Length: 60
Image 1 (tube, one colour):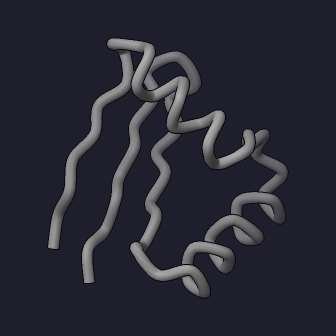
Image 2 (cartoon, one colour; image 1 turned 90 degrees about the horizontal axis):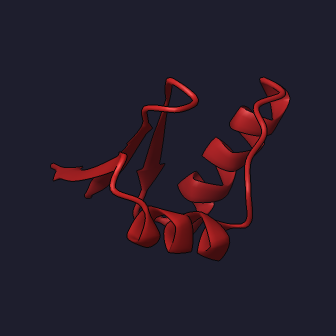
């Protein structure tokens, strides 16, 4: 299973997303429980594609 890690320099936050809908939703709810502001998934990736301060890596 692939793990998608996204690091934003502005917020100094690190997000892990598993390529699996159920686990993905679990992590989203976990982030919400920590009261971290999150955006819509597609908006998030649109921002990721538009900005250079975001780094993307894929690890096994």
